[in-house]
Image 1 (cartoon, rainbow, N blue to C red):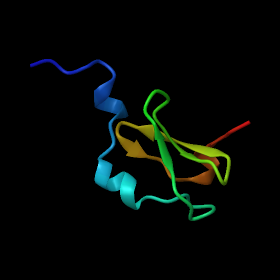
Image 2 (image 1 turned 180 degrees about the vertical axis):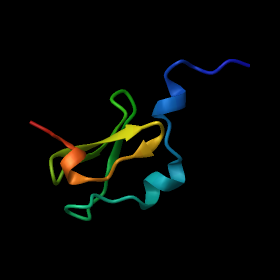
Image 3 (image 1 turned 135 degrees about the vertical axis):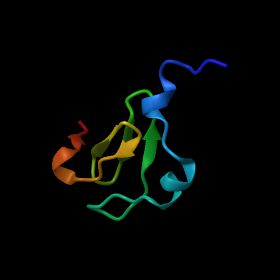
Image 4 (image 1 turned 120 degrees about the vertical axis):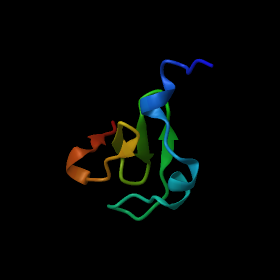
Length: 65
């Protein structure tokens, strides 16, 4: 069995995604697998996922245009 090259670091447990909310707005997040980010459309922020762990700190988030 071989794993897809992009999956190990980018995958996040789906159950975790169900309970996580934006720390700024407390609103829902969407998962952008290609960029390995959790996106808060209401806060216009994208939180990085590093080694499978969402970094939910506003100062670590990327601002969306």
